[in-house]
Length: 310
Image (cartoon, rainbow, N blue to C red):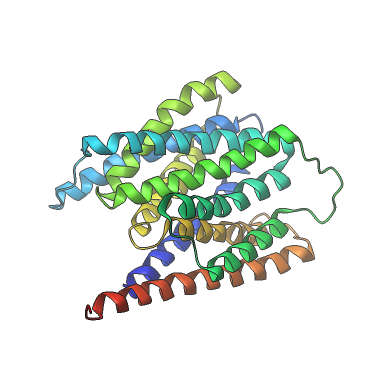
């Protein structure tokens, strides 16, 4: 069970590494491309990827289907609405309050929401060491996305609410998906969740920014975002949720800024502020603590299962 938890943590970290390529990939898109459409289309492409993945597995003898139990549909709809809400509220919030503050609030609030929801809904509050690691990672992630000068920063109240809503939507999506993947194949769950999210987000994106206009290069980037940084990553993430808690999954996703940081240095040739390097150390330290907490919990659970009953 300990090895399964460690494998789950590694899958989330791999998914986060792929998520971290999103910003760099989007930086090569034309300036007029709408972020609402980019977020929506990557979900739609990912939905097609999940369907193709299931078909490929079936050709190899796997018995996975696109069917989910009828009792799971309310949860599928909730997860899909939350995924759509996460994408739309994030881009709207960042537009209102700026990239630095918006990203810090949206990404940073997700683990806090997940920990609180797990405490209330599952009545299994995360361990104190989980909160320590999570707070370290949140603080470090905030330092990594903040500029070295406060000039131009503005905390628009509506934007902050939207970013907090984005973090809440992501936390709910994760906890609901964890419930779903314990009863249905992860690929099937992600197919339907992203299908619902795309169906909701397409008319919303059209209403917010009009028809999508893109160059051939933009479409190539959208394909990459949908297939790799969304499709493959969320397939890994949904498999991981079979082995780790939803709250830990959301926290470990904070490894995303680490990849973005490395790509900013190596590909875009940015020069991060000194505080960003301190933030990097905080994120890595926090993630180590969370992984340690998760594997320790799994070890204790395994020991309790082996112990003879009184």
